[in-house]
Length: 491
Image 1 (tube, rainbow, N blue to C red):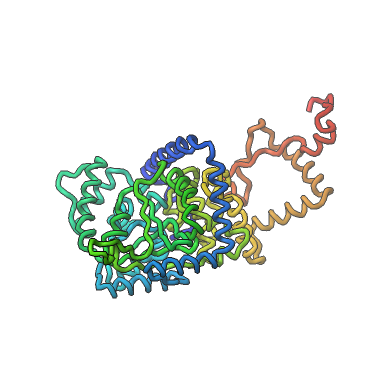
Image 2: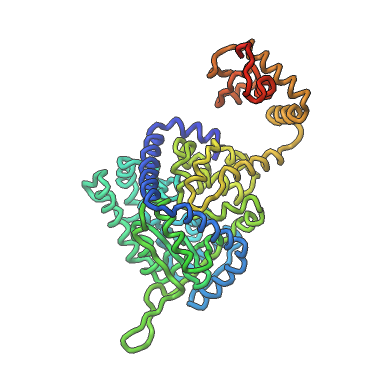
């Protein structure tokens, strides 16, 4: 995958994708804004969520052990996975031990992050996505481009073509007479997936929240496929990032009000499933019987999260609840789409989370903190108040600090020169006089810009620079005593 600037330039040439993204993000954003406006206490909910997450992260080690103890007591088996490879090995081993050569999956960005489908395929186990958007992505041989709506870059006509061409290779083919009407497409997907639900003995899910005090996992979704995954198969495996922990059951009240509104523009998700270990229900004879999966496994994934937690400036990214509200308001994402980011976590949160999880070693990850205009819309939309613009500048500073001193880049030389000038009043005064001289040479009105400078064509290729003013602010302040008296020279 090329670095973001190249990938974004390629994506911008796809006018159909830009149209699809603009329409979809605008629709979701409008629904979200309308429902948020209903709540007078929206800001209080955001502050509460931020406080809960901060408290959890401050004592994450204690809450993780509490969760393990409670889940184990309820009959679940908890596995610890320090990195993606071990998580994939655990899940593949559990599926093989269960005698499965295929599993059904509920949409999970965590399993996308670790490349679970590829690992299962290498172990001889086929993984079938059951979320409609994730199914579209899988049938197309594509990768997700949005955290909540993985196929947001596809329109209905494209989806119909994907179903017609590829659905038969994965199971039941698309029916004759299928149209690009949403009901017709949904009916085809439902019939295709039903046979997989009925024959699969193993399901793999993620979880939105893991409640420490009870060992409960919670999954929210809109289609009911997640509910079928957590109830029908004999073996249920859930891969959960360690940052999904919340302390108490009561804390879910705050997050459920924030998540649905922020993610899909709904007051409440249609399906909210919770499970605590192996559920046993009473029978008529008094003996307990298992109601649901016979085995429940929970894989707690680190994969760089403790490194993020160790960074006092960067750990706030772990508050993310994967609602994707920041994507839907981002002027960069809404034009480039998610693939340009080269990560399962695109958009503003991906631009900070991915480099923190993977490190700033690759050219691709070193470019991600610059994939933003720093307009601040992402912070305003974030339900847990993640200061994404601040994190972006924090990561940009790390990128610059890691650059080799020799040979110096033109940008580094320019920044050093600016720093030296700003630190010396005499040099600053000289610079202001030179800027005034440049104004007389270039001329132009108040909105005039400098289109290019020889040798800096690349920098000017995406930026406009205003013509320097005739007089600096400090000179104007001194001459007019802070604006209390204007000179008679007409300036």
